[in-house]
Length: 320
Ligand code: AVJ
Image 1 (cartoon, protein in one colour):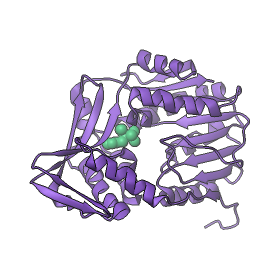
Image 2 (cartoon, protein in one colour):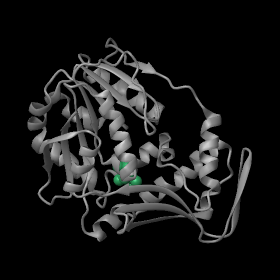
Image 3 (tube, helix red, strand yellow):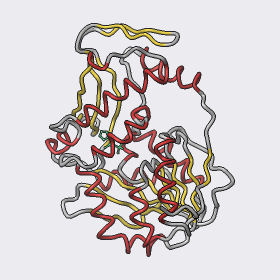
Image 4 (cartoon, protein in one colour):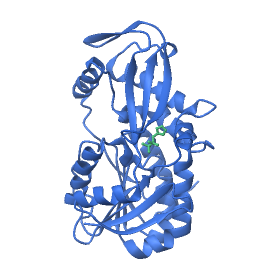
């Protein structure tokens, strides 16, 4: 094992647990209960998401990887080397790492809410790529964020793969992308992955797989909530529900109470009737045109769109 390599710089967030409890409680107490999908990602949740990416039904990751493999050189030409590559929701950092040989960024800034998971991944990556300066940010960027001074401001490229933008409703996505736009200099850009509308059976299977990994991923949020807000969710009393909502062009994930029950947490409680649901995630699906126009409304000009032969997924390069 190589030891004598630079170690990545680490920024830690303040633990606003009171704010987190208030945020989660507000969702659980709403008439139609909901939670933010960011709470799917504790360390186990991040690992379950990695497992999802290997499921035959979950096409986005491998379809996008195919697009990177086929067009990575083209993307590197468009983006240029020596960039400050800011990887939003980096997770295990595998997607960015696969592009390093072509993209050759000067600085790599992975950002992820699942801090410990991220730090483990970056420590390994720094050993493989000692020449790239790495600054890991373990924070929640979903409601906007300020980049620390240690992030270079030249040639910033925001990398937002995997169609995680789909977790935002379109109007929120525009607000979020405007925030990125404000942090992208004139010489910067955006490389973003977007899942496209397709056959509904394909979509439904991707979020309700045969061996139940996505169900475990969804249910694991309850364990995470127990930890975050001192709740007493019993995972056995809930089941995973996922379906494509055509009117909204989104996959919805819910957790449904198998029987009437009461959940208690630090400072609150809620009764659920049998069949009542907690809405845990949306995953919006776009057409190529609808997403390009969304980018435009956020101030970004689309330069190039790469897709797979079936047009299931798109990777888009846009300029500020
Ligand atoms: C990480 C948000 C892109 O929406 O497909 C996978 C999360 N949820 N299976 C997605 C997810 C259920 C995923 N994103």
